[in-house]
Length: 504
Ligand code: SAH
Image (cartoon, rainbow, N blue to C red; front, side, top):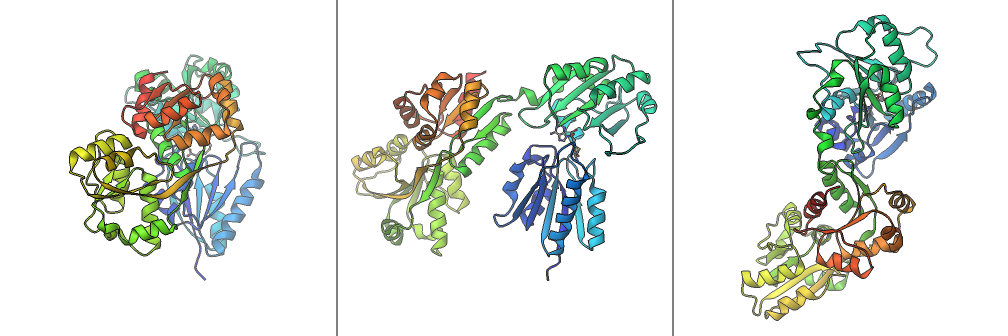
């Protein structure tokens, strides 16, 4: 039997792309992934479809029973010959109870590797500009737990020594005991006006930072309703130059943006929003249905090399087409000498992933411009053109090309069907004013959205609507929805640029 193996992997502090390269690499090899509350579920994107995912919601306050269960599952899965990844928030070895897990593995004779991660305190420093060390004021840092083992009678924390510690004191798990921590330090001689800070949900779009003198930090956190997970920083570091805080100045920081595409499309778009500091909320409105098993498509495929131009008007069209090619045991050579046009940069990029460099991409990414500019680019008289598109695409492109004397064949490779998602949270969020933007990247996502959510729910709230281009805007207007901004460049990045420009 294959021997099992366990990787204890640091998931990093929150943001999925802050995992290490090694961490992401071993996630791809896992047969089984065990992850707890602090590891971002977005990391499961790296995991193979066939892997078993075990979620262990280990919360503060729960006893060691859950840890025993985790240990048991770890040993069981590895002993069954599986490659197991135990994904742990931050760094596995910082307040991660790793020794207990390792003891169980050693006992069971299971080999292991530990992959480090960015620990919360270190991420806090980068993402809030609170420098834990500084040659002027702090030459040492100490990491302290705010919560010791339950049932432990004597404490490991020497408050007298800690109160005298001249560097930066960082508390993990310190929210629940903040009041007594501050009191103990002050009672033992730490000046009451020592700078202190709390950083909650670091690296996430809902990161919160509160700064106050030690004697008032707890009160201030209660006032501002700060919730864990949070790191407490005490010492001159907590008074670092406020201008070092780059993260909360990101253009979309603190803004919640609903993305309304299919599942892979939403993931793509969400990553772009995160990069701009925003909070993406995924709402699936459409599912892509592959239509490449039609006779029409199969017949077209046999003679695709006879066309002068093959035109793709979406990334989904490209992916569906090449998936079909692959399952038929064919590859990009079916194009022969046919030239390939793409509606925009993203579609061209998708083509290049399959080894095709688009021969033509218009300057403006709409079907109309694609038609008009292709006519300007080359003589289409009597040329044979194949459009590989969504079944729902309009006739406009076809008419423009036919008008220039081309013989156009239009073959649907996919269609979008409405999805059914849980929508209560969204209606509630809009009602409460907790959602800033709704974004629409195609007319079918508009339809899929409003089949699930009434237009009155949108119109009565403060939420704003953003559209990728004229056809999508038209569909929104038909439904009586106000389009607050429309992308100048009809791409997802263009859509986010428009939201940024609209401001708060
Ligand atoms: N192994 C983890 C720490 C686990 S203890 C690491 O290296 O980061 C859990 C504590 O970590 C929380 O109570 C909190 O103090 C801190 N923490 C984890 N993620 C955090 C986050 N995103 N923002 C702020 N603090 C976080």
